[in-house]
Image (cartoon, rainbow, N blue to C red):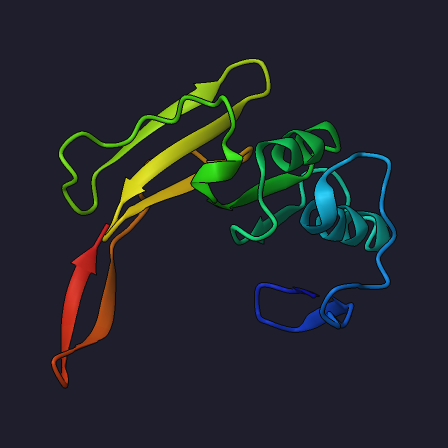
Length: 151
């Protein structure tokens, strides 16, 4: 596992060796993947208002609440089976680039379902759901490259 600057410079690395790591199980009961993020927050002594990003292996609603309690911004994709009782609305029309969001007003965490080839779930305690800009994506399609603009 690595924690890096926005420019990709590693700040901290903990080698993953398969079934076990050198990361202790913390008292916060976040599970193995959540404990990795807890360890990084603790080890790097992240200050309030720092922001970190994680993929769906690490993310869970409990981890978002944990980061919120420590005033650390956290954003990342979530696996649908980790959402539990959170009623994240799936977009009705399955139109690519459409999305719907719900805010947990108690914890100030936003959960968004964004439609791509399949539904993508995103959670954040520091960003909203509105796209900031559009980007060009290149992908191979039948041995030819095409460009798609997404929001």
